[in-house]
Length: 188
Length: 287
Ligand SMILES: [Zn+2]
Image (cartoon, rainbow over all chains, first blue to last red; front, side, top):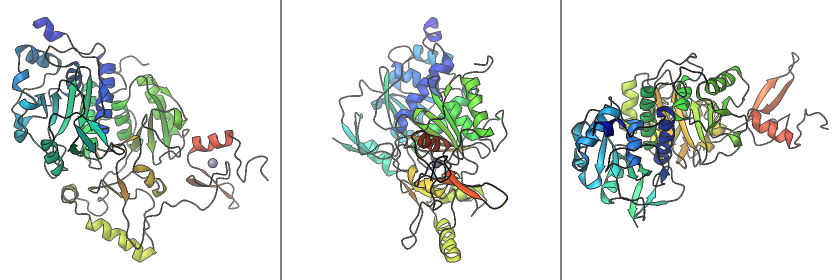
């Protein structure tokens, strides 16, 4: 377990993080469009995509909520070694990591009217980015974009609070897509 | 590439902080995200905000273009381009079409941008309401309430005084019907290019420690009034070097006797037209 905690980071940290960030940037700028994000090999069951997002964005200044299904000694060890992020309650989380069903949506920070950016970013593990279940419209989308979402109603409610709200990454194997609070969502 | 620097100058913790701010900026188009701006090896006013955003976004495969008021060859543009050649080892270009990331001061290129490009703006004052209200807490509250009445009053006073809206640079825009945003001191001629753009547009203000962004295809509307609609104006002339009639023009004094000429502010656009055989009033061989 000790060696597993030490391995699985980026081989070339500055350049691998630059590539991973560009995938995160493209994903957040173009909601629902899948982006490849290779380079990380975190302990199972965490996906390489979620590992890469963590390595790129999370550190000792960003408290992380770890959902019950992922709260294993191996993953805690890997997070402590590579990110040094404090593990926290949902109310304090800057990032939250887990399967959709394990994330307590009503407990996360959604930002304040003066600072809507002070809100949680959810890193959601899903089994696949396809088949599509939802039609997306809004900033970043020319007409509409179809995507797989783990639910519909919570994202409709999230948009209704705009500019407050949470922003999401969906991670499956070595790919991710994003859904910012600005996106209008309807079921297909 | 220089030893002793991490890729693209900034340390890993600073890059993560700027990257987090950029992602929140994309999630709330037009809203100004505070970030902890770092000292850069160049003075404020030289685009330290844009440089930090570029440094946080670059990948080794990027082809970088840097323009200063449309020109690739000013001291400022050349020094930023060299900085990233040295610290990130990226290729550079002056051709808009060949660039994957373009850092700009005060212009949007004439050539249509694509989905494969990122445009990074250098921003001096990111707060569009600052000249109306100096207190940060108050402007933040006005954005929170979408209370933009003062801005409309200011623009309408322009009309009463000048017969038209006098603002010709940094002309304010409404983003996705929610946030009023300063597009940086681009000429209002460029404002229509902000909306429905296939490229990602990122704005960095170094001294003011703010980042804002426009995702692709965002709805961006220049503020105006029904009886005084927005107009993307330029000098009513053609480029004297390439004959272009639709590009944004700079007026250049050519001699002490008051001689003057107009030329494209976008030097790459102008050179491309001349290379393709287009002539202007002052071109060699022009009638
Ligand atoms: Zn010209």
